[in-house]
Image (tube, rainbow, N blue to C red; front, top):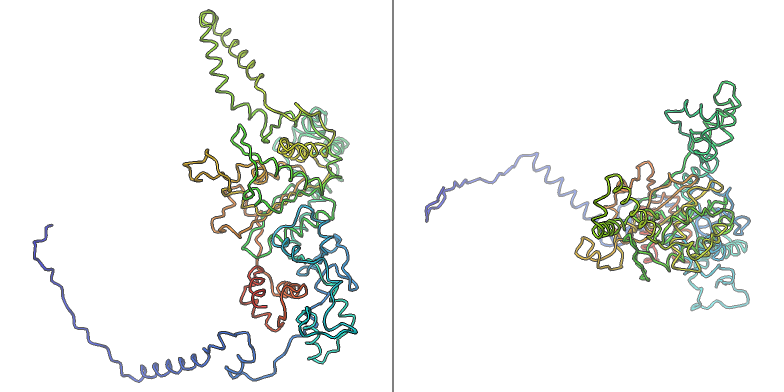
Length: 604
């Protein structure tokens, strides 16, 4: 529809009179509202907003009268009861019995030297920063208030030490300071590790797994399998056991039953032994203690003589720029980082690796980038076919004289000849078969070009071993899913903008696999880190991670927060903290460890 030029669209104008409500109800409402606003302005005070944790000023402005209960400072700071392994005012060694339900929310206390012995590969999370700032204990320090024969200078180094402030607070509250308390406070110096409820739950599952590790799952053809197991015709196919996955001893106990079934002793133990390899993903917001939980679980596993593969820092495979080598399968090898991985593995598991024998077949089928030999040879299929076609074309007259059957045999022989002559570099081309996994690891350490092959071959051996319980712990798991700092022309004009995705590197690719079910006796635990990435885009279900395997770490409880702040105070990370403001800062930070440390170190 065309609108003629100069046409003005008419519109109606309405004179809406203002509504004036002079009723008694409306005037009462306006008066009450004004009175409430006046009361609000009395409460809304600049000083009150700036210092909302000043309880006395808050009560004065709100006309709140009554006795104010002050918290006992002696029960908060320098209290050995908050440390699990402190006994008789001394830091003792950690034992597996310390991982009990009554010690939840308390802290382990370590000296730097002892912690290096437990974690030679490093610690996960923010604890390495604490170790760098920690001076190795406070036994040599001397507080200003306890100097004997010396005059405490107002400008001394320890004039504002937490112990001095603590002792002055006791004197102000008319509590006589004890010399034993001073000695005790000096010994409570070290690196703290908070033992949380989620860590206890995971440790409890590991205890159950340690006793009953094998999966017992009956197949549909159980009766037929039992028939062949009685005749002993299937033992070679099931690793010395029967077809249902039972061990050789269980097969013998079944044979001893005249009814052809399992004996009563086996049935009593069968319900008890019903566990399998497991995987856990510890997820949660930044500052909820995910890495601390992972450290606690790794510590328990090492104390209980588990074979532990702990990777606390996956970021180095993404950010640390080193020499990389591209393989035929479009994977990227980091030789120097692979060698460091083997060094860390040998430091903590030398005795275990020495007892595990090497399977020559695994070494023969493993390539330099960790892929299988057959998968690597598939790349040359097109080249082999082109070579065969060229050879047939050169001898076309003789080839056409053959029958169809002879042509097929001729093509197969040519393919086998060229396929067998494809040479893929292998460890056995240069070295003899090592006797155990420790010698295999040393080959990779001394020869960086073979380090990645040794890692993959070692993991293939660990999939089959049942002699030791195995724990694979990885922190910063989500860093395997994004692009790295390395550039490659192969990824130019792609959605990666020329950057190589981290999962194209061999070691992150190995750690990213959610494959604990392929191990006979293994638990895999990974945790996320969100200091550089957005947790909102994380979807673990795309990696095959079931929601039952996800453990969400929550913020600290008030008791955990209290012990956390008290430990920061004991280690002189924060100074002159008022214990009566604890609940306020807990409310302000939501019990988040990262936010609490950031705020308290800024203010105190």
